[in-house]
Image 1: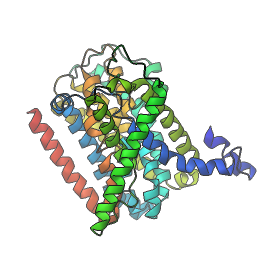
Image 2 (image 1 turned 90 degrees about the horizontal axis):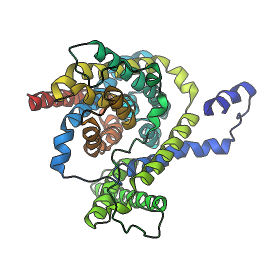
Image 3 (image 1 turned 180 degrees about the vertical axis):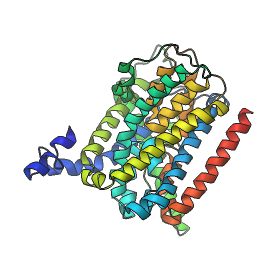
Image 4 (image 1 turned 45 degrees about the vertical axis):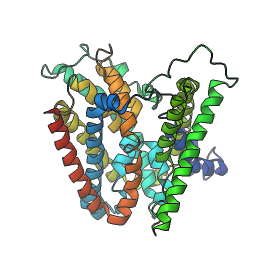
Length: 414
């Protein structure tokens, strides 16, 4: 709807800015880069922080499979850019990490990388990435529901669900709007919880503290690395560090015995609202002209992303996940094709009766996976690495890492 009434459609037909003032569009262009900091700062807030042994014990398979999916997206995307998209269609070499940025990362990640891509002279990659992120929201749900149907038709694939999902479930794209950070409920609060501050106000305060810590970390890195003669962090995005800030705030509150003051429901509500604003602003300000000029690239990258995720689920997941491999794999498939919430939706589609421990294991995965991939530090570093090495070297390096991760997963399961 935003695109329909904006300057690129209604405005193109009428020769005006459409129904959206130019000043509003300028604000929208900067909004995604701000909102993503709130979304990522909320990931760790309000959660029980178990021991690392407990986290790893339940989420190791998810972390390994998710990392295989992400590094495979890096490798295949970069090699596709080098071998096909740049020489044949003229796409910039800086688009080498576009699949992981858009599919595993999503709208917020690609928008958060916008300033860095613009500084590198490739602003069109942002519009292409936003288009792919929008497509991934559809391929995640539709592709996942097709995989569930396929599994139910195969006696060789054990599935907790015993009935075929309805078409309404298949097309319930609204379900993807579930909070992408709502993995666990808040810790139970003691009886005396009246602090004089509403849970929403407190949630805003804790999110603000997480972002402030992230700013401090980034500025210290710029100072230290700058003193060593490097400017790699000068245009580095803030949002990957807000996860660390959120973890630090939650850890301090837990250690002080005040974890109950961080209300998970309030934090999640703020994060969902921020994500809604982020997606609306990102889609509303993306260039349809850029998408129209890169339709072959959109199609090729989408096909690669979907096929890779399906192959990993059907051929690697049974050898990496232990019991209930399909249900666990569907959660990872959803995250590789959309966002965290898509993974929960597909896991619930495969196991509506919650007979497995997928929800807890997949939730714990976010504590180890999200800070580094799917919008984390490695995802953010992908653009500087491509700028420094080129997509070919980056793709080969990621291919090697993907193979090593596969070997690790197979040996660990074996």
